[in-house]
Length: 328
Image 1: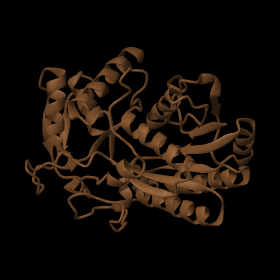
Image 2 (image 1 turned 90 degrees about the vertical axis):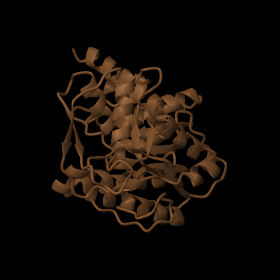
Image 3 (image 1 turned 135 degrees about the vertical axis):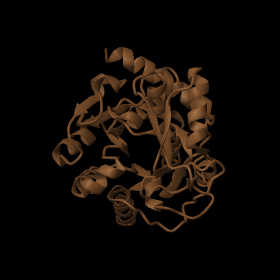
Image 4 (image 1 turned 45 degrees about the vertical axis):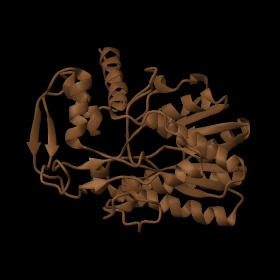
């Protein structure tokens, strides 16, 4: 039996493949390489280049590789782009996920683990967001992910398929051994951009707003190491295999850091300051978004290993240095 990882050539998916291999799992990867990288897949002979909506292809993969479970990362993830091009997001994240889920049902796949997002909560006015907070996504990206959660809920009622929908908070860092990391060109993730600035690859970094109702006036976010996030999926897989009911769970650490605190961490790791400039607030940025990860820790038995901001930044910085050499 094997695990099918869709989007396994991407940032989180490539770390997922590593975690599964470390657990002794048989892995097959399906990726159209629109944003992923062939070199990031640690099992190149198990990489199949194709689209998750190609139901004939997915059906063949399920049969030939005896797929027991699907871990689904393939999709589009940029919030501003989703506002500018909502149909792209409803196609890539919702319609194509529907096709994939149907292929799984027809192929007798037992378990489905879905890459969801904290964006389904919108701008919650609570100190720590648990899974029972009212859902109010503010972008087509968030709504496209929530629609897939709804589909999975309904399909699990009608068919013999159990699922876990994991709602990510702010994913950062890279593989501690330096094998993979965040490699997308022109990425907008704070820690990646700050590391690039510290390395001289960007001339400055903007801080969007300094008048939020937070201790230092900048936005607070819950940053989770990408390897810990991958491990949460493996924990979810083991939970479902053991007969666990379908579940929705947050993936974060339960505490946050401000933009200024993140930039201070990057300066510590880099060993020098860099050009930080003040910019106006961006529309729609909540002051603080922090997870309550109790359910993942207690029900899924997930235990993070890298809950330390400087560690996350160090791994991200190491990857940026590797990537700059690779791209020369």
